[in-house]
Structure formats: structure tokens, C-alpha cells
Image (cartoon, rainbow, N blue to C red):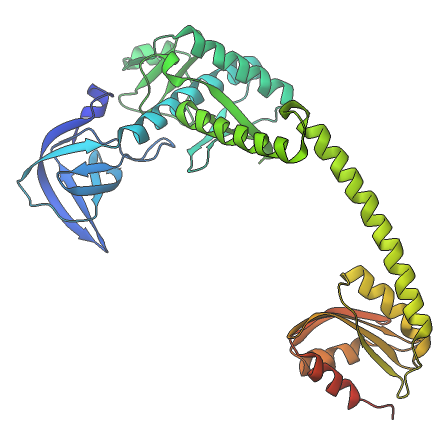
Length: 388
């Protein structure tokens, strides 16, 4: 027997009384079936409701063949009358977002001919997948018009047209539908087949905010928020901008320009440091004594991979076989090994990696990687490789 779905009779009903028809264990949870429920089950891209049944927590809600399954953290006795209460802020958030998504999808469909082929309410945001690409200006227009619908506080109408009426109705749907079809209408903005929950009037959505978009499967994926989550997100972003504004001693509206100047200064300083470092390494290489055994092994603090390569090549004239430079801390060093003219150091690098728990590779004249070994272990290994 199908569950009586109170959320379709009154989407704002938060508490109810119902009888437990069955309760079955599933791993560490239980699946509870009631004769009636206000818990909306997962469907149409909208997550299932959560809340309580008496003192038992409802963690999620799903539907199977018309029966609503309440996933709980404890069992309930079959036949018992229980009081259910849904997590209202959680439900209202989804009602706002589902309604806002309808408006944005409807506007973009009407103006640009795109179709909604995917919709998901995630923990971070809502994603909307459209079958054709859109640019930033088109999406911004859609956002502006969607918020115009919010400001008008239009009624959101729910209906169940007859088969004959459906044949003449222009409505959006991701797939072919049979049987009774639930149609959600936002006058002047959208007509769509949908099983989800929605607010009664568009003003309750609060706001529709696009966070960003990306090309996706030949179309576009839009990230968005509505209502309470959009307001919370705005608060978090404002707090972050205010904090950065204080750190940079710049007005909030001038933060981007201040950061750009800071990055330019950073790049200039980075170039200066690189030049000074190269001069220092050239001086050290010039003063280095030739390697007695044809192999040179040295350690230098604070070198990145590019500097390691550069320094090892500067040291090549000081040795007949190869120059190895290590940088890091005991137990974990990055390295670069450059071979003298005509010397292929790839086999040497493999042997060193095997002995010193390392990994890496490169070209005949230069190999690079890292080893998990102490400085003493590295120095001892090189000492054993005297020139034949």
C-alpha cells in the first residue's frame, strides 16, 4: 500500500501523527514505513528530508514503488503511533532552492533554448546542467530575470492536468512521462513537470545567486544558491573580503586591485631572488674543488627543482662523471644529478633510487627526483662509488 504523502497535501506541515507499518534492519540502520508521512523522500534532484519519529532520528528518506522509507538510527515497534517532525530549516532550504532553480531554468530555456538535463542539490551548492553552452552575459541576464520573478512574489501553482490537457500544454520535462503528471507553474516564467517540494510564492525564495559556471558535456554546468544558503554564503564572503581589506589596508571595493599589485610585487621580488640565487650558486660552483673520484655530491638548503637542476649543471665541470645536488631535510631530500659530457646518468639514478628509497627519472644528461634517506646514508652511498 502506498504511503499517504502529506507533503503534497500541505508542503508546510512540519509535524504529524502516523502508525508504524513495518521496521526492518539494514546494516547499522532501520527502514521504517508509516501509513502517512510529511517526510519528502529523495527524488528529482532533491535530497530526502530528515528529522525525528518520537525520539528516533530520521537520517534520510527514500521512496520505493510509492512507499516512503524512513532511514532511522533506532528501531520502532510495528503498530505504534508515533509523532513525526521534519527538520524544517533543512526542508525550507530545499524548497527555496528547488523553486529558484525552476525559475532560472525556465528563463534560460525561454531566452536561449537550453534544456535542463541535470539537477542536484549538494551540500555546498546546487548544480544545474544545461544541454547547450552559455556565456557569462547570458547567465547574468538569466540571474537578473530570475530575481525579478522573486521580487514580484508570484504564486507557485501545483496542478495535475488530464492526459488531454497535457497534450496541449507546453511544459519542461527531462523525460517522457506517463500516468498522472505533477505540473509546477510559475506564471510567466516556467511550466515544468516536477515531484519536488516548492514554496507557495516566489518571494519566499529570497534571492537567486549564480556562483559560477563551467563547460560540461557539450553544455554548461551552473552552480547556484537560493534563499537562506545564499544569504549565509554572502555573509561568509563579505567576512572574508572584510578581513582581506583590513590586511591590505584597502577599501573592500579596492581589494582586487590591491591583490593584483601585491602579486606583481611578489613576481618582481621572486625574479630578484632567483637572480641573486643564481649568482650565489655560480660563485659556489666556481669555488668548488674538483671531485677526486669523478663523482660530486653536495647539499644546499632551500633549492626548488629548477634551482637544483641549474646548480647541478654548474657543477659538472668539477667532475668527470656526474654532479649530484640534494636539498631538503634529513629523511627526505630532493635531488638533481647532471652527467658530464657524453655520460648517461639514467642507470646511475635508478641504482641510487633503489639504494636510497627514491623515485625519479629524466633524460640521459640529467635525472631528478627525491630520496627517503638521511644525509649520512647519501654521503656513504656516494663514497662507495669511486671511479673505477
